[in-house]
Length: 394
Image 1 (cartoon, one colour):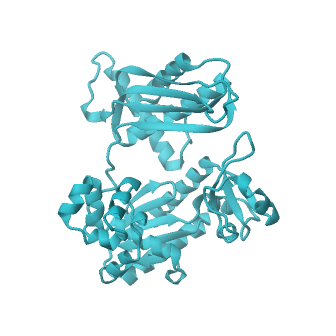
Image 2 (cartoon, rainbow, N blue to C red):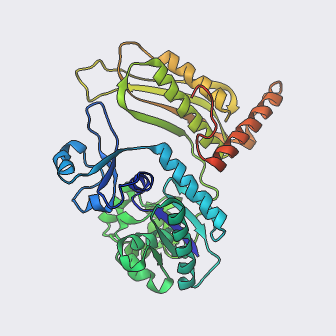
Image 3 (cartoon, rainbow, N blue to C red):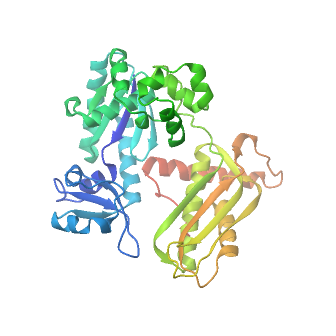
C-alpha cells in the first residue's frame, strides 16, 4: 500500500507550533516588501473562516486583518525546513513506513507492507499521531495502490472530517472517488495539458482514466502516461530515483531592494551552495554557472537594469567552492553601481551524470578530496538539518 503524508497549512502550522499563544487564533504567513505589502502564503483554518485566501495581497485586506486581530507572521523558510527534517527523522525512527522519501518541504511518500485498507489506516494513524506529538504539525494521510492514487486519497482526507485525517482509497471505491475529482486536482496534470483535456470534455479524473491509451499518447509525454496508469492502479513512478534535472536554479525576489554589493554576494553564495547540493543529490555535475541580476521592473521611477552572465568551468563538477567561485566571478562582471536590485539568482546548466564526467588527470587527487568533503557536509546536513554546516562566506 502506497502512503502519502501532507502537512496541513504547513507554514501557518509551523508558526502556531513554535509560537506559544497562537493556537486557536487566526494566523497568516506572508512575505514582506519595502512598501509594507506582500501576499498571504499560508493561513490557519481560523483565518480561512474569515474569508481570507492564499495569494491575496495584504493591502487589500488590511482592515479585515486588523478588525479580527489576525496575527501576521513573516515567512521563515529556514524554520520550515528544520521542522520538515524533524518530521522526516521521526517517521524513519518509528520504523513503520518503508521506502520513505521527502517529496517537498511539506509532503512525503512511502509504502506499507499491508493490503488491507483498515489495517493500513491503523498504522497510518500511528504515523500521524507521532508527527503531532513530535512537532505539533497536523498532517493528512492517503493510502492506495499507487502514489498518484494515494494523493487522491489525501485530497479526500483533508476535505471530509469523517476520515479523521486518514483515507484509504480501495479499488472498489476508486471509480466513485475519481468521478468526483476535477482533473485540475490530479497530481501530474499541468495547466497546459489541463486545457487540452477540458477542450475534449475531459473534466474529471475518471473521464481521463476512461480515455483510450492511444488518445492519451497523442496528448501527453511519458509523465502523462505514468499519471494515467497510476490512476488505473498501476504503480509506475519511482520517487527514489527522481528524473535528473537538465538545469538547476535558485533565486529570490528580495523583500527590500538593495544596492549593497556585499549583500548580493552573500545571496549568490547561498544560491550557489543550494544549487550545488541539489546537483549532488541527483549524482550529477555541471559545466556552466550562470548568474542574473534584475532591478524592480514595476518601479518605473527608478533606473532599470537587467543582465545575466555565465562562467564555463574548466571541468564538470559539483564542488560547492568551485561553483561559488564561478558564480561570484559572474556577479563581479554583472554588478553596476547606482541601481537598486530586486532579484538575483544562480543557474547551473550543461548537467551530466557524475559517473560519466571527464576528469582532469593532474587534478584528480584534489577532486577526490573535494568530493569526500562535499559528501561529509551533505551527510551532516541530511542528518541534523539544512544549514547545519556551510561555508564561512555564507
